[in-house]
Length: 150
Image 1: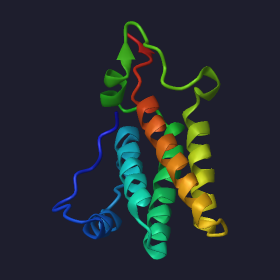
Image 2 (image 1 turned 180 degrees about the vertical axis):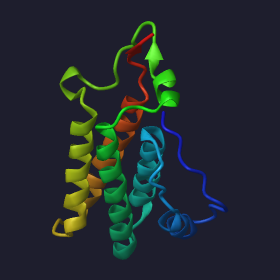
Image 3 (image 1 turned 60 degrees about the horizontal axis):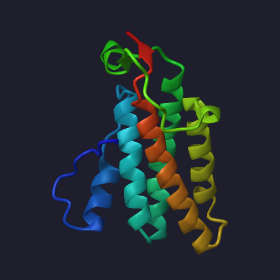
C-alpha cells in the first residue's frame, strides 16, 4: 500500500488542504514518491467540497501525473531497482491487460481532466473522484510490485 506524505498538524480538512496545496513538489521525486503525492491529493479531493479547492487539488494532481508519466520512460534509479527485484514475482494487483504504468497514468489523467472541466453534474464528479482515488491507489500499489529478476 502506498504511504502518504505526512502533513504537519492535520487538525482539519481545511488545514490539510492548505498544507497539501502549499507542499513543494521537487523535480527529484521518484516513482514511489510521486505516487505517494498523488494518493495524498486524491484523499483530500474526496473530502473537499469547495469548488476552488477541488480545482486546485486537481491541478496539483495533474502536475504530479504529468511528472509520473515522464518518469515511466526513464531508467529506474538503483534504490528502486533493488526494491523492485525479486526471485519470484507475485500475483499482480492489476489484470494482464493493464500491465503498463503509462497506460494507467493516462487513465488517471483522463479522469482528472474530466474533473477539471467542471462540466459534469456534482453527483457524476463525486463518482469520478472516487474512481480516480481507487485508480491512483491501484497505480501506487502496481508501481511498487517487485517484478525485476534477481
